[in-house]
Image 1 (cartoon, helix red, strand yellow):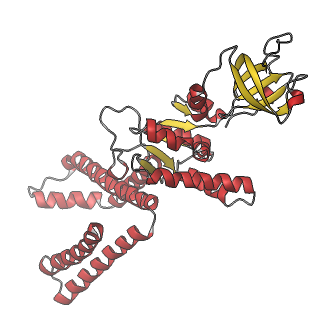
Image 2 (tube, one colour; image 1 turned 120 degrees about the vertical axis):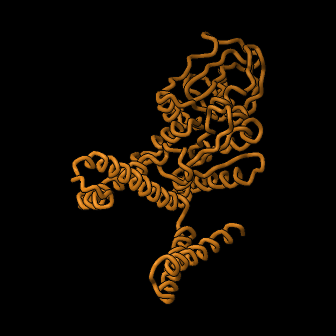
Length: 367
């Protein structure tokens, strides 16, 4: 409601001010002053319409252009003052300062438009290309908490589709604002519109999680509307955005995490965090496991714990589909996650305890 009042006041004040200046500070007739006032009010209303019709990131671009034009005009005025001060001694001294100033203006008049246009073009170009970096400019200011070094946490699509970030953020990361780029939302929307069922479900799950994060009263979620100029790949945009905001990057993409660390961006991997929180199993401990498929080595059977940890059980190939009691013999951390080697309870290990670890190249890579 307050914003509507501000917009209405802006339109009225623009029209009234234009009418007053034209009526009482110029030689215009009352009719002409009224026309100027109406024209100024209509222009202000059109500007308000642009504010309402266009999305926020387009309006920010428009504001950036305005800042660039203002900066260019100020720079050109400064340059003209310097040039005028340099040329002033060369003006014929007639004793009349007004006449000397008139002569100086006559000399500078042909180059003023060129200087103004050049300065405005350069400043607008610089502001448009670097507006994300210049966060001290009012439309892009980031009101970060004092004493905080990081600027929050950037979320990629793999984390949003995974879904565990909601529980983690609500319980452990209340002080970190969550930054979701618009291009990540667009990426998940494309998945949600995919003709493939699996991709469609993944995209919808990610979009649903964004809504859940926004609805949570315990979290601060920001949708970053601006794109990252000069970059096409989504992964490169995420790394660059984290650098600009001094934020951490939350991802399950193994390769993206490696690239981000190379670029000195702090990475939070939900898979690594989950692996660190898994219950450790020591050699000799027993567990119940359902054998779901044969292993790579002769006689091995493979099952999974509730947290997804792979368990390789010796001499369990014939127990496919059955629940067996197994004793832990060894554990191994691989790029795909933690693996546990075990043997059926009551049996002695045959040969190399824990069996030969499978080739990590054949294991599913984490994303």
